[in-house]
Length: 280
Picture 1 (cartoon, helix red, strand yellow):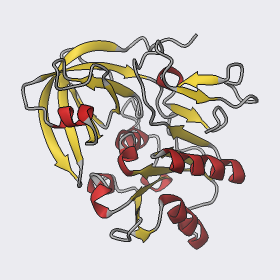
Picture 2 (tube, helix red, strand yellow; picture 1 turned 180 degrees about the vertical axis):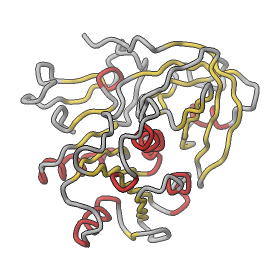
Picture 3 (tube, helix red, strand yellow; picture 1 turned 120 degrees about the vertical axis):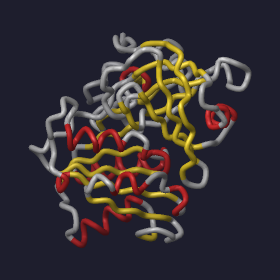
Picture 4 (tube, helix red, strand yellow; picture 1 turned 30 degrees about the vertical axis):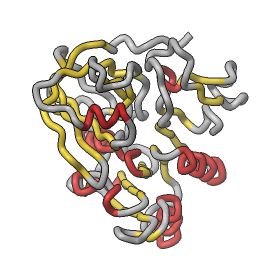
């Protein structure tokens, strides 16, 4: 049976800063008591206050940035758990469990272009992904800037969280909003089709996607139809984050690598899955 990763730890982390981004987001910066080795993009941590401000069950968040001992998380403020984290004050302590799960595949420059598709706060696992693609986990470059494209979609401009930070990498960045307030008017899949039809991006590419469930279902369908390699980072409810509660099942493809069992555990076998593995 899948087990929690060997490098996962439970520890306290000091809140350093809470920075407002976009209409309803924050970037939460913390310093764990235990130093973390470099974390692969799209792995996640469980976070909560240890008092009554937070629900008893911690919430999972992809690691947004890592700066030495400091970890940053991009959080969309929605319910009681995220509100408690957004209201944290410098010097307070949080319970932090991680790093958990499996991240994106190694992003190399030897194959087709990497096209990253983000929907809203689904941008969270991509900052580190681009950074690691350009620099490598060991500091050695893996991809050139022209080998990475980042497509960021949201309902409106104010939900394109921290988009200028992505533009700062110098990779190809394209935005889409439902109301047309920034970039292409439409969703991120329509933007991709438009960029393909214009020849701006190659049709032969490798896809990475994170966002709302309906978006990921559409990306999965597109990848199957176009016979493209594709990995999805899933956003799902989790109780424990370490494979005990069985609260985050993901249906597997019977003919895929995980097909020996009808469901995979998102927290330990994901959150990143190849579309060869699962069926949304």
